[in-house]
Length: 419
Ligand code: SF4
Image 1 (cartoon, helix red, strand yellow):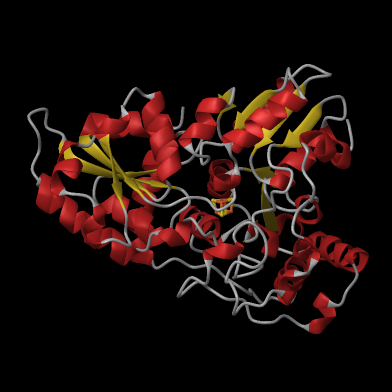
Image 2 (cartoon, protein in one colour; image 1 turned 180 degrees about the vertical axis):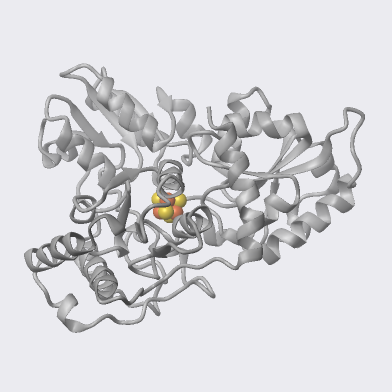
């Protein structure tokens, strides 16, 4: 495996990730950006985004080895009562402690499959911990080690905006059934959304999807509804619909920042899919130019990207799919091959280390980690686990029972249609 510096030089880049990312997350000036340094830094502060209170100084001043020892000791003391889930995009110092590592779908399944544990510690972001709480039993606790670990995409749709959108769309499209008995609009929300939006989908005959089952979910939805309102990631919605043969002319955009969504009534009534104007700050960094550069540097390179990337990037790539798909593609690639990947850098670097016989590199050599995932630092994990050992649950994520009930309907539909 060539060194990352050699790859960067070959691709012609001049710098790596923002050096600020070497700072610890508690050093982030929260007034400047709720999402800290890195790829999401320019998203600005989201009103109402959860914040994390300072944790004791003994955690923030501990060395990496001291934190590691503390986590290992606490895990040992909690034994089988504890389940630690780690998202693929978490840093290595967290992943080494996880019982399961996966994408949001796989981790939701893991949470649902383990009613025997007392405590689930979710090393991911806020919406994932909410989902774990909804799918776990009432006596289990779910902890998010750092409450500021949100998701900029999930925060691009709040429930008030979605209710306003729904009222307008049902005014335009009606609420009755069409000639085939289908409802006029089926709301579909990506897993990367709040529990309140998942509950909205559950109440309105809708469903949740992930990047690994988006196509199956859309097929399910078109059997029941004439149109789909797809929340909150426009790119996953557009890329999936295009792959199903729905042309761009049958897609409309709902911009929550514009009056009435920014388009006229005719565009919404004739659309097969209405895309919410949200995006992932990390995946929108990938460009066609980066793919061209990778192909010049490595003529036989295989380019695989995540469906949160733009349509142009997906069209220029050789393969598109969820993080689980990307992991599988790299596993099955022959020794000696070069694979350029359009997804979060922590995962790409881990895959590169696991496959020293292949050249695995991130399409954007200056891409930064998901800066909200990055907020789960071992100091927060050690603090949360020590709390559990002492019988105190810190940073417990609890979803209102009414919201959880409706959200579970949409999540259960998702689990049932997974291919
Ligand atoms: S990678 Fe993108 S979608 Fe995933 S948690 Fe980070 S900001 Fe959200």
